[in-house]
Image 1: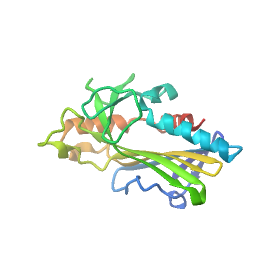
Image 2 (image 1 turned 120 degrees about the horizontal axis):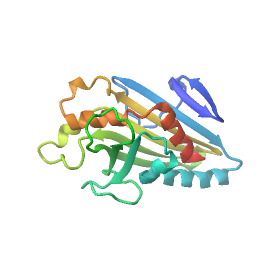
Image 3 (image 1 turned 120 degrees about the vertical axis):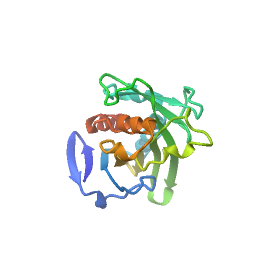
Length: 215
């Protein structure tokens, strides 16, 4: 099912009735989640402006906790060396995850999510544009080298999409292959911790962030 949150009401829609962004991968195992929030502006010009602002909010990951202070994780953007940076996210960056309050992971070490792709698309013939960021739990920048770079091998992912279609703005989150409850098949402890941390975020917390992107 597809969760569409609009005007403070929650609707359930079959996922197959909605067009899926190409960065959202195939679901193979575990839990699938699709959350969405839609707003309609008074004019196309307003929608253009709001889309630009929403795109900035999406890519400035250091501000996500300000947009939604109820997130149970502290998120900060780092470059591929693991150094904190204050800018838009780039492909190959990492999101450093630290627990906030109670955590489903017992250790106190940071966990990591890697920015696998960022794509902007413009379809002027249909008055449509979109921005998407695809994220995957990772062993982190300090463990990646020529010998173990393949340890990030997991299908688990989360993808955020913001789309403008005419006067309408839609923002959505898509998790695929959430195996946080069945990680016994994964051998690397850092990757297990990252998966559990990322997928510990509750639906209502992601929904609040989605609303903050576009409102």
